[in-house]
Image (tube, rainbow, N blue to C red; front, side, top):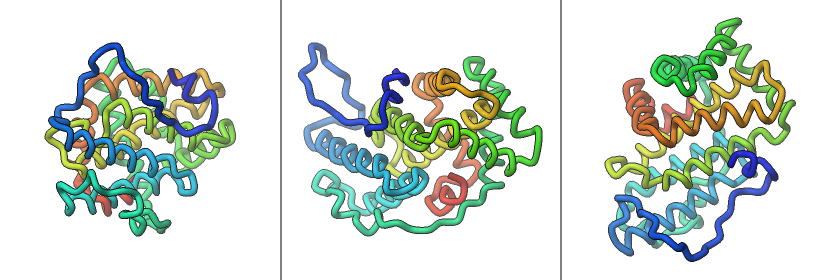
Length: 249
């Protein structure tokens, strides 16, 4: 599957075709109005996450800003479009606290290195890499190296996140979560995946290695309670608000 995602740099798009089976709808989608709401929100999310005029981190933060606005417009989401959020989608500057971010990432990766056998090999190697020197320096070196190895690295991360969002029916992936809860969970997924991939790939050189670690991570994320657990983790760290997440993603 990931081989197909990375076969070209084109954004993920949709084609409507009739199904020969009944696909289960999300528990939040109980009627036609909810279906229109979901489809509209999904369209907005698709446009934001594939807006390559902005760095991926800014696209994530823009989603958070849009969701914050939507929380004040409950019941009207099905009528809105991207033009209604033009102000939220403008470029902006933000403060990133990299030492704080790396501290949070390490806690999260350590947690799953201990509890998940399926990704332990990758997580332990990532932790070992970052522990072998000053963390900020090691992070920046790993990031620069991977960008040199894969010049389209940000597109690869975009596709990983976008594919996850589609699979999870984001932002309707959990009936008990608000839009801002969903946003925080998505940021947690990004932090986790980014850290393990950078650390694991610091001494690897092939696309096959990248696909191996990414596939293992998303098997865990997609087929466990990870999205809820990472939200709970961020909540315990007081990092679920947009201003707080801005510092760490």
